Image 1 (cartoon, helix red, strand yellow):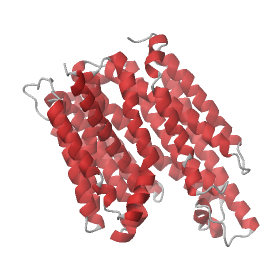
Image 2: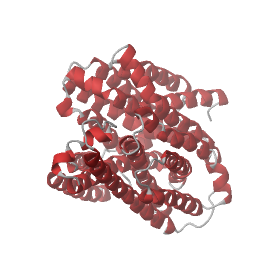
Image 3: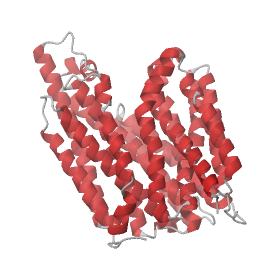
Image 4: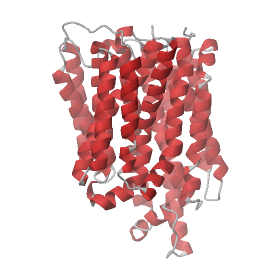
Amino acid sequence: MQSKNNRLWIMLAIFVATFMTSVEVTIVTTALPEIIAALHGLKYQSWIMSSYLLTTAISTLIYGKLADTYGRKLLFKLGVVLFTVGSLLSGLAPNIFGLILARSLQGCGAGAVIPLTFTIIADLYSFKERARVLAFTNTAWGLSALIGPLLGGFLVERLSWHWVFFVNVPLGVFVWLVITIFYQDRYQQSANFNFDLVGCCWLAASLTCLLLGIQLLQNQPILGSTVIILAGLGSWHFIRQEKKAAYPLLPLQIFNNQTFNVQIITATILSGVLIGYQVYFPIWLQSIYQANATKAGLVVTSSSVMWLATSLAVGPLLNKFSPRRIALSVIFLQAFSYLSLLFVGSQPNDWIFYLIAAISGGGMGIVITMNIMLSQQLVTKKLIASASALITLGRSLGQTVMTGIYGAVFNTILSLDLPLSLQKNANQVISGRRTGLTNHELAIIINSLLLALHVVFGVVLVLFILVLICNWLDPNHHRLS
């Protein structure tokens, strides 16, 4: 048993590790224009983010299996080292290809750090204590969402784009030292373990095809759809391999509990909902209501604040109600709030977006925190790391896949509804610039944008219906202890 002092140090390290891996996305996004200009990488700019997301997704399940076999400390420290070295090399990258490779290394580290923070928490704290501790780590996610763009802008303006990566190096060194000194891993290494290399290859191939297909879907729908079909075939081969492997990368018995499956599916779908309002609420406010970038970005802040606040209520709620009842009530409230978006027009109604973002973030704070806790509680102790990795992978894939789908839907509606002569002007209206357009042209573009946004959030409502059905079918109607 870790001493109270050691647990405090470990939790501080986990907080910093969570912050540095989550802020990586928001801080780099802010610096992206400067990075592209400096490295002349406009043609390959999407890969700056995609390479990180791809290697994170591929490595997540691998680290989960290895952590269930070799223990948490070794794999967590390895992940921190890879992430820190990847950050250093990203800042030193001489060209766009060097940056993409360094970002891939960063992703390999994040694939260990993100799920293993949840696993270490599960090892150190009881089920009843876990909600409070997860709320603490959620603070790091909230802080990264709030200060990431500001920090990125400050570093680029005052120093250079290189420092958006260098800032992670001292944080990584601190986390590595604290875990080395204070964390005592009592997990017993399994004997006679053979790594499932074939399963690993099929997993990498299927996830690579999936993420590539999603990237291609927006501009080359036929090629993108073909690559996604290849991803499905790769997944089928991966499952076949896992069924016959002596030591499978993903033990399929983990899916024997239907309530566990509900948690994974719910976290995956709600993560897709999450990326919807994070991306398209600011677009709506800027393009339709002419809000400036700062005001449009702040709409997501109410979501982050409510996420932090409501995650503290998960423990007391689970003491009184079944997970099924909690999830159905919260998700229905979220879905009902989104329904109003289908009737919002072009007249300014900023407050509706702040309210919906707050309701959505508050719901996520309850349901996704509960998903993490239950996914760990419903498996054997030997599979806790695999369960944590699986829910992390689901959340990552939910956001990545739905980003591509929303983009494809949005662009398709615009291309079908907007005259060809005005399609190039839609980009400037989305960024809030309306110069050079007649009132008639502007009205046509705004109506088309509004239609596209309505359809996007119609897709979001379909996701809510799916997740409600999923939780309705959860066979567990009882409270969990």
